[in-house]
Length: 105
Image 1: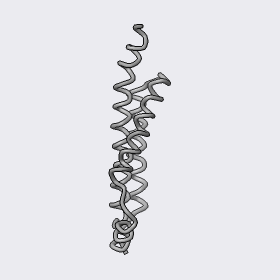
Image 2 (image 1 turned 180 degrees about the vertical axis):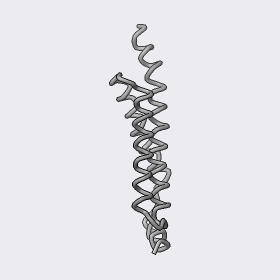
Image 3 (image 1 turned 90 degrees about the horizontal axis):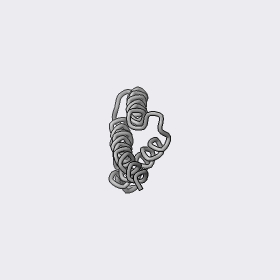
Image 4 (image 1 turned 90 degrees about the vertical axis):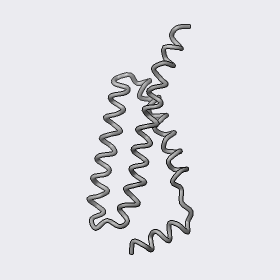
């Protein structure tokens, strides 16, 4: 009976960390796309964002999970759950996207 509770006690923080890392990664992606539409050098903007977001996510995964593959999996599940949440929170209708694209040109 002790093993499942021990797993749950280590999985909950890993899942929450995955949620936080996913929110940072995908929230940062959303912010980068919005800012990149009006940037004078969008390629540099996107490249720097990609490196920063990926480094943060991988570093966070390594700090949380280390070499334990089960913690990596639980953290990844949280990361993917955050993707769904960020997508839902930032979803724009087609009219808003068209208006935003028109502002950039």
